[in-house]
Image 1 (cartoon, rainbow, N blue to C red):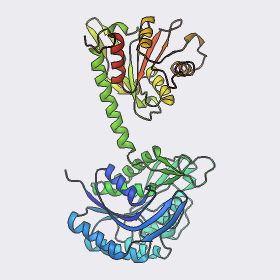
Image 2 (tube, rainbow, N blue to C red):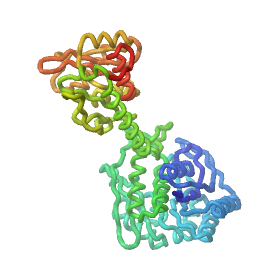
Image 3 (cartoon, helix red, strand yellow):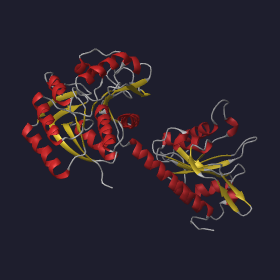
Image 4 (cartoon, rainbow, N blue to C red):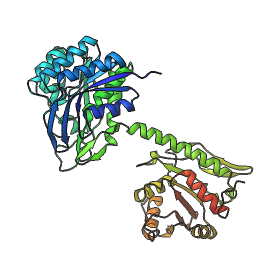
Length: 464
């Protein structure tokens, strides 16, 4: 399969969060081949834009021709074009080669600082709007292009109509700066193609307290506009219609903000978030399946399955909820001819998942655990093996708490501190109506099972 070829034409962001750098990261994650034409070099960080230098248009011309004449281009995206001269040069090239493109009318950096001359807006309207496939201004940029103040969704619609009438075939106004929507916890983008309006709404990620310019997690959100227009370009190049491409791009950026990188006072969009999570979830499931295969071959395992059954779970990196922890649906139970287990899935465990999540708050690498029957001999075997052992007392459990969370916190508080790390084993001796239990922790489910095999077989990992 040959990847779609996209050229991004815009400025270099020295901070790495926006501009050409953000585009290339986005294109790579979305499976398209990226080439780049640099129109300007900036010196910028979370405090603003300290300096910028426009690349000579002759060199920009050479870059475009070098790429198109050899590699070829299926779609283009334009970003920072800081002067009328640059806009005219780029528009002439795109017209000559009849390249479909997304116009991202970058005017200011997220941290402050002007990236486009005020006089260049007229050139953008005259030369680029009629050529582009779609233009993607934010609220401020849409106001500058349309000449209208935007405070409401109705204002957005009027501005979109005005921009369309100035020559843009389609307009997507991104609404992350529209206070009437963000104040209600929404981020709404407006799509207009001359035939009608469509809205795309997702949760707005609120700024932190006391930081007025922030747009996410208490930081200045950086790179969201570039990432959105780049993602939109990639999806259009793949053949999606405008609405579908925009919806996919918005979801992509929303995920990237949710797991954004905190850099200085920046909250930088992380375009690899969904890909990383999907890969991590797959890896966790495969690890758990292998752990189950090992368990079923482990000599002595059947005898340590408690009455309530055994479960083994594993969380993805950075897990925050039960939905991020995979385990055995229905637990593991002994049968007359062996061991029965359900399927491995995410979100099917409560008890073992809560213990793992609580443990990860103290030691993030301990992402897996298994519960087995309590015996004094097994606890002694854990201690003899050099494992850090801690316990909690079920009789002391307060009312109205989640048992596994409270118990794990108690064990972490009162045990396992002598070596400066969280315990490897947490046990309790049960209570009235509560079965005594041992839980063994480690990095992965396979690691947990290997640890258990050694405990059951005198330091070796023998199969039955």
